[in-house]
Length: 200
Ligand code: MLT
Image (tube, rainbow, N blue to C red):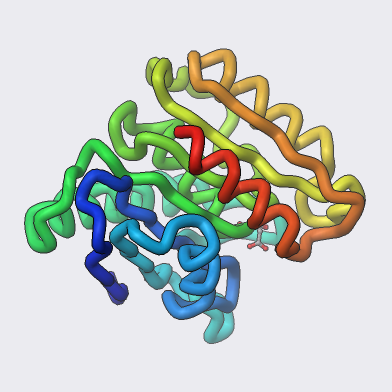
């Protein structure tokens, strides 16, 4: 997968896995990593799917309606890429924390829904429920931060609540942060994510 890897100065810190939103690239979330932790490794990945020229992490049939078969395939592809990258760049595979926005948050949530040890934690900005009707792995000792907008037309607030309870039901420790805004990624939610990250 197309990506950027930047080695951090402190090998004990988690590797930050940055996952952009629809139409983004691996450059987009680099400034977030700077705010969240300056010492951590950064692995920033570009989604392999193109929708009218816009990179995404998996196909969708319509806005908010995911192509489940592709989601499953792409989730495995990303999980395998994490395995390969940990070997190639020599970082701890068990200590990856995702930071995803929108479509990137959805694939991060999907990694947690499908693979018990894909991530140690995730900061999910404006996520949706990636899949329904499946049993989640045991997510005890996994940490999730969700930030959501009370007026988000793409991710309604019930959807964020549902994701919260599904992850918590699987044993994860989940914190939810609300912004009285829409789908946009705000500096205040990134600062809240940085505070959450410090206490991991
Ligand atoms: C998705 O397709 O993952 C969500 O609708 C969010 C987005 O627009 O990327």
